[in-house]
Image (cartoon, rainbow, N blue to C red; front, side, top):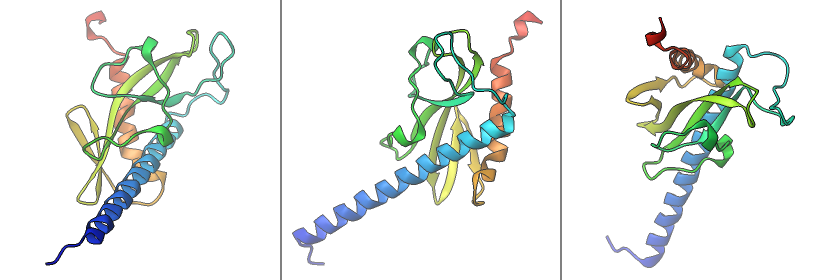
Length: 162
């Protein structure tokens, strides 16, 4: 095969296009998961506000990596702002507002990692991995939302107090 400079440039463009497509798909999936989780939690109908009157979200996404994020270090990161990791995944924390009486609210944060493998969307919570059906729409996240609601309950439980 006689490879020319233009062939390499064309291949680079194909790679860039594939990365952009993957990134957009993961952002869309993160937004769909956020929406399904919010709907399935049946959050109160009023808009929460912190003591200064700042509007809060019941469920939100936060910047995340492998380090523990403390409530005072929360950085809201909407799905469209999430960057693609070197392994072609996105990592973030999904936060549930549990107390409005703090500046910027107090959220319980759970880690999320989303990636595609062999065309299948995989979501990791720590070492636990879930595959998401190919169904169209946000309903495809119903089972994962159910599991994360259980993890939020676990985060609000300390068996030492029983």
